[in-house]
Length: 203
Image (tube, rainbow, N blue to C red; front, side):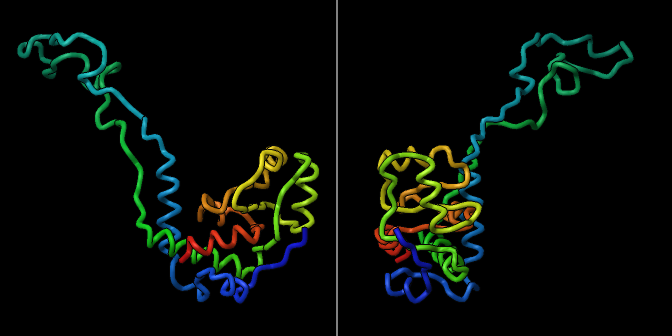
């Protein structure tokens, strides 16, 4: 399987809409990556207030006559074992990014990668024997990059099995690949069918 470097002219011929000048879309990329990271947060951190901690609600001592400051029960935040004032509560960190912003970010990132000469196109990508050694040799026949992303319309079970123990490579369907994954890897191997799917996503 031979691979060739995808040029901007080849991308235009494949109806892949990209940003060539590198001046637009930077904020869109930032917003989208921040949204990806925020959406992975569980938001499950929780602390108990004075109304939730275990303990009696009895007043510590009488209001007047002791010479001490007035207090209610021992569950107040100033006491050890009391509740937490303004502590974390379960919340939703997710962010919504409009479709136009996602498309703009994808165009910008693809434009930068293609301009950098790190996008390779191959007719197909499949590891029939399902062996990791075969997967590594196949990827290395295309690129020596430290982190490689392989994008195809779909992968068979043997190909997915062969790349499972390779920490520096990922196989992701073209319909699911994200801007964050494209930015993270040093080289991208695209199949010709995947190029058509990405073209439809940037339209």
